[in-house]
Amino acid sequence: MTVVRIAGLSIGLLVSALASADVTHTAVNREAYAQPFAGLDEGQLERFFRGRSLFRQAWVVAPSRDEAVDGLGPLYNRVSCIACHPKNGRGQAPQQGEAMRSLLLRLSVPGRDAHGGPKPHPVYGDQLNDQGVPGVPGEGRAHVYWQEHAVQLGDGETVMLRMPRVELRELAYGPLDGVLTSARVGSPVFGLGLLEAIEASTLQAMAAEAKPDGVTGRVNQVWSVERQRAEVGRFGLKANQPDLRQQIAHAMLGDLGITSTLAPEQNCTPAQQACAQAPHGGEPELDAMQLGDLHFYLAHLAVPARRQQAEPAVVQGEKLFAAIGCTACHRPELVTGTHPLYPALSQQRIAPYTDLLLHDMGEGLADGREDFLANGREWRTPALWGLGLGERINPGSGYLHDGRARTLEEAIVWHGGEAQVARQRYVTLGAKERAAIRAFLESL
Image (cartoon, rainbow, N blue to C red; front, side):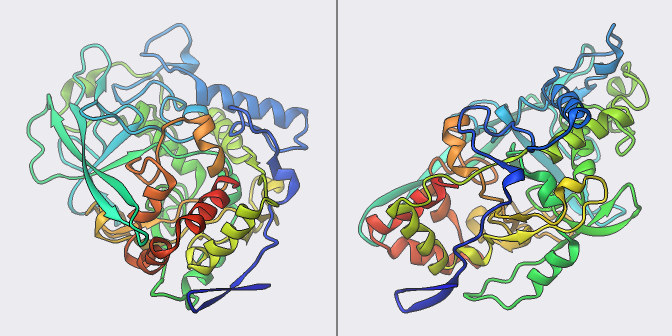
């Protein structure tokens, strides 16, 4: 344990946090987010590649000759998973005035559903679907306009921050008065199986720990469709899904209009008659084997290994990252428990740089929309592993929940709420020290 001191602050830094070798890889090309775990046998690799094909598959309108991949819609956003997670990485926020592509818009109205989650809009549901199959009008178009303001750092340097303003057009089913909205960009999908294998008790223990600088953190409690009970949430930008299977099923229905055993009802509200009468691709459209293959694929996507760890700037930046307080939420080391399905995920020492907990991130990042226990200012800490390859794999994709931050520095300066103290320490550092922190993040 190394103790780092900066501006009178003394914080312990664990410098040996490394992920286990068999769940990481050293590829640095544009396929670095799409590599399987090392050591998968022939049958497992076959299943991995079946899942990969489904993830990249362009789904088609029913009925079609290929019944295995029909059932798109009736309302949907994109025709494939990879469209919002290009190269398995981060989606891209639209440019000024453009329509959303890999950015989606969550919808709800005040109140809660039967299980304590967000209450869907009675006409438009819980997500704006801008596309419809033939004969079914898409719900409308969301266009993003960016509003910028300047923030001055301690040494006089200026950072321009932008905030999205969403304008709704061509609403096909009437006005959206009183609706709560939240723009979300597609997130990277590698390493999810390892995060799924972290025990709920580990998350609860981290939430209960005393932390410095006013940082708290808490678990979300969400509804498990499969087990019909409330459980710890860990997936989704507000930790609103309990496990990876349910996250997949929810995304397949919400983004593509594909039903499954965990989400068997078409995404049509009572007001959308043409949607309800449209042909479907089976009941369910994603069968149990396909859902299992998608789960296996996403659970066994390996994590890019650290790079350039011995570089002086990276070493300095890692120490500063801990010293200013970032590791209170971006935990450098976790240990997985026993995964109920996949032994390769069990008892792994990993370096995700997340605690998977909800944190108040301040008014600047607030969406004002509750999601189970998460309030309108809270977001789940995102994992930072693989971050440094993002610009190579998804150029210009941006950072934070809606892609507003164009650089890592912008993302850091946007932090508020529980992260305000750490953010302020970063802002008051000199340019060389701030660059060292960014060099460390680019090494992940």
